[in-house]
Length: 351
Ligand SMILES: [Ca+2]
Image (cartoon, rainbow, N blue to C red):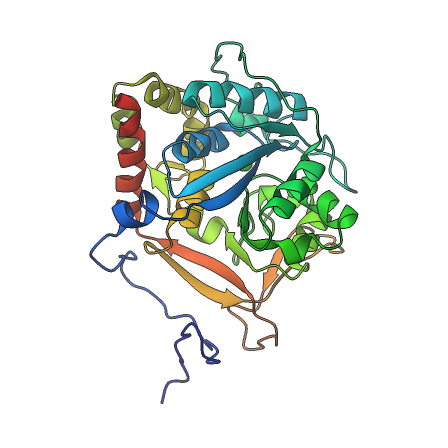
């Protein structure tokens, strides 16, 4: 007899073993994209924290058309490139989307460790060395962690925090405002991996940039959905599909194709079949989970390991299950459905 017990929301069954899939993950038909992402009432108040970054830029392009969200604020952090650049890029991309949302500058350094960046993926300027026009949009005076807390106070128990960069701003907010966890509804991150890593064999970039901040997030009591490499590496476009996206006809679509070219070359050089859209995958997950596979789990971050520093440690594949399993590890996505959603949202720039 198998000891596999399927987790069901609302009961205490604990998943003992994750089933092995032989064929690509397929979402259950029919696709509810139109009803979940465009007509949700009331809208979900959302805070977006990013280190723009080419895939952050695509995430911002998608956010503009996900009307299920009420985007309260956007905060920036050092990560893919320096804070000055991630902040400038965020303003530039929001000018391109036409989204009039306040932008707040965040942390320029990780909490404890030395800074690391990824210009080999994102280009020197962070946007694949594509130059956007100077934005007329201005930065807000308040800093990111204070602004995030104020937004949480204004939407107690409702605010969804989506973080697709290193989690330094959130670590600072948690340290300064002890009641912040009680005010947040949930956190969705792009970061981590139940298996493997991309910056070291055991760590994913966003977590490795600031492991101490990331561990504060997983340990603060708010349920976290971890959109890590397990899923995001499956949310990719082939070079042909990226060209197709760029040919949709809008300046936004052309920008999406152009800014991803450097990251695409890098990804192909590593032997991948295309370019993974890590941050856009987290955004689409936050909007509607129906095309994703996920399991409840316990997750913490290794902050002491000599060769495992920044590893997201989870009991997902372990025989030993921890008593508190209030996070979600997103393990897979229906790539065809993901692509359809991406194209659907990007076509909305055609007017
Ligand atoms: Ca990012």
